[in-house]
Length: 325
Image (cartoon, rainbow, N blue to C red):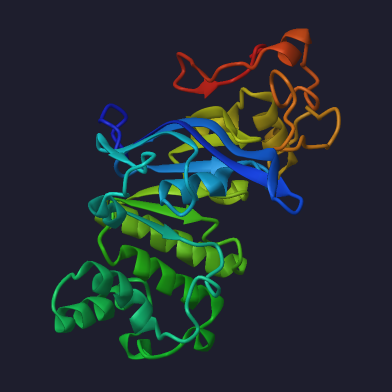
């Protein structure tokens, strides 16, 4: 379990990721997609922080920006105080080793022309870690660690099941012994029984290695099971951030309440009376003024339409961005 009073391992401050919309023969910019629009959070050592929200809210883009796979428009990202991904600077090589990612689709994230051994060994080859013999030994050890047989090392992705391919992805991400794993919907493409196996594997790895997870998911059942804290995103911004138990027992922000109340559940306490005015999610290219959720929120007032509420810390350990709660 993470130490709530320890210095954060990763700090993200006011992160923005905007994509230009271009049209016409001259490809002039005619608009902007504000995919991530001012996100801030800390990730502690040994913690699982989950980013949740509807499709298109910016949670995956946040993870890709942290990995340097998309360029951040502005904001600060620091790994134990060291600036990473700053504008105009090369991504520090040591930082790249300390953060790795597990992708959603275990098939498209693997090269079909390279064996499992090649895929897992690639980070060691790139960073020049160990001798060729030591690399082969580490590949065999990692395959055993994630539940694969070492004699499958020369098999190709199409020879594995979906769950086995994701185990290869996990082994590859662990090769450089990172401090942080960004898990972008790591089990959403798998059968439920396989999901449980991989979630248990991730929990065992966190217990044994002390790795921190940034879990990106829309599956609230998974999030509730694995998370220490949860950050709820809506249209590129975090609207609520709190310990997982508080989020699921008593959500504060109206959007969080709507999200949890919409998830299938046999628990009668989850069947809330809250309902949105409509189901139309605003576009990230043309956000509403004030609070972005106000067109759907039954609590909305003129204040909500004019002023965007800041994400404010509260005495119970949660932060929420709402004028009325």
